Length: 196
Image (cartoon, rainbow, N blue to C red; front, side, top):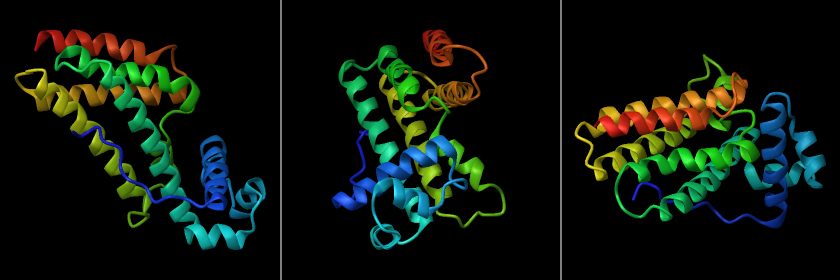
């Protein structure tokens, strides 16, 4: 099933502290605003330890995104377990997962979208780009799989609509345009799914 969580290499205690510190700092302040000196200081390690464990700041950014993604996938998997039978409610479980995830874990929106925006144009060879793409393709494939299992006629087109609703909601969370965007997106998703 597409919802499986990718295997990540185990971390030493020092690497875990570095990743935890970097994850908090990157999400709260931004990737460019946080230097390796600050990460090492907050983690209580030397810069040498940071570089020994991750090799570069870019590799640390990718690890940050991968570990957040793994936590999100575990959260989604738990919600899907609660709705084991194929159908509309199983597709909507992704929105239910997002509703319970976003306040505590993504008040500034999607870490992958934010990282992609911060790296900016002209850096197409940056390692963040394939990681962000991998995460978004995974979510689309999951929507497509769940829509197909639900018996949706044009499951790919409906999965595209689900993805647009989801992505619009996560951007709206980060922009604080209006309250409870995932609740709104879920309502529109339910209406669309019921028509197919």
